[in-house]
Length: 323
Ligand code: ASP
Image 1 (cartoon, rainbow, N blue to C red):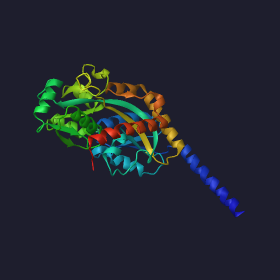
Image 2 (image 1 turned 90 degrees about the vertical axis):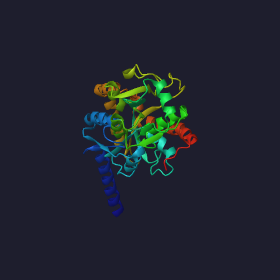
Image 3 (image 1 turned 180 degrees about the vertical axis):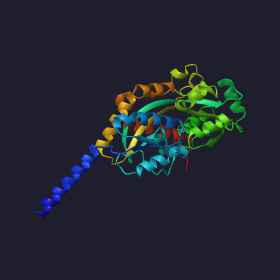
Image 4 (image 1 turned 45 degrees about the vertical axis):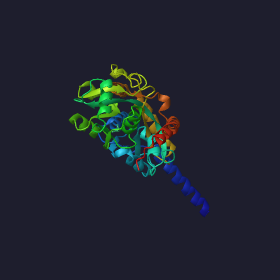
């Protein structure tokens, strides 16, 4: 009798938990961003969060947790309650930080549930407006001749801007002083102010500044030219054969988040990516939403794994460590 009562109580509480998640979300969802407000990751987060509100039926709040290299937000999400109210948006850094940090306090492959891939974003090689080089040839010559005084801004070790800069400097066989920030929004401020010389950053942060003539642009890092910046050559075209750095974004939740919650998040992400305003905003900023069949957990899991396998050896052979 007692055990039957216990079993009934257990079933009731289990079905209560199930139905609680079936109604998910019943309050606003927090989307953590690993970098500073106003930067490229933040821009993508705000576009996606806004478009997810309707399909989620709840507000999706963007919360910036900036840190150099973007390593604090994933850690916070790993340690958050796995109930779907704290999620993470992150870029390629999820795949590069495991090779760069020996003491990373999260494991991208075991500490998260995957929601889906979001978009692909190329990078641009830009410099302060009055940098004394009118094209890439002059830029290269100047950087090589002045390597002791030229400065490169990035968002810390593990950031996309760090990865791009590291590969670029190794391709041109020249090392310059790097200046780390907690995101490329503050780095851009200093570039606009002329206190740092150049950087490599996502088109989502640089397109408007390029179009307004506030920074100089020398190249894009994608294999093909970017439609919204069609006049800008690729580094490959400029002689750095095979140079390609493509930034991608994904959405994550803490490990153990119920499947019903992940399904709701993935379905809402897919709805957001179908939204014409999202497509237009991405296209204007040089980004491209992934095809809808990639905005799901399996596609993100497979991509993350492949990117970790791809970048790990490149980073290890470059011998760069953050800690
Ligand atoms: N663009 C930065 C990076 O280098 C991130 C950011 O500020 O959003 O990874």
